[in-house]
Image 1 (tube, rainbow, N blue to C red):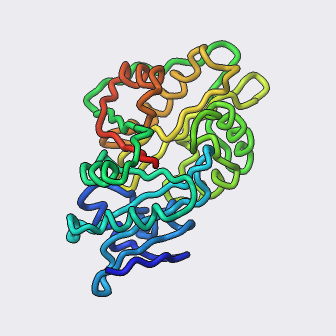
Image 2: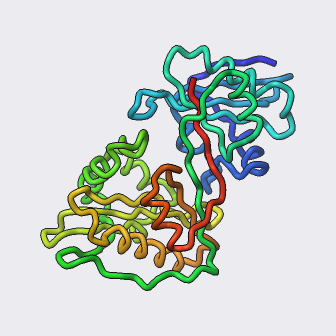
Length: 285
């Protein structure tokens, strides 16, 4: 087996096979490489000319200075030490690293234990089945209204709110205007499903960005409220606006991702009927 670091690579066939077996990563509807893997560094494992494993290093990293690593082994070539070899090579990178295990894979847990990697973060995926009845939509408190996002107008205001709302979050708080503009070019982007809460002067104080995946699944992509506007029901109003919008599109189910230690958010989502689907785990040396 040969391990090679590359600055650019197309491993779409491998990722597609992994997606079929594990449900991740998401493959764009147009059949191109997932956006998260189009930049950064790439480590490819090949055996007899066949790509059997892949590790991606996001060199931009998170707000804590960690570079982010995701690793995949082709389903037909597992339990042959390929994952361990990829991890060992990645750990030669002389930078703080966080390695993600999708769906808390037991193979990843074994490798982490053998390499003294610590379980440092858990990210829940929660799901809302269509059999669960949604509460009626509620208007925001006096002085605020809801409207949809206007491309070319609202990017900076939304990013400013996001930065304040997620100044504690290792990735979400880093969202930039360029990131939003890039998302607007993706096939899934729909301004009609991007809700803003504004005051009487049309100043943005909160948002709910929804997403529909290629398989039709709806997602509460991100909900953010400016700290100065929290506590008055804006979060609930925005969340319900997005949920009703997604249901109106006929999605089969709705998902979201939330930190395992975010007790207030978990309480809100559980009251709405969301249940835990699986856990993604980050390891760090």
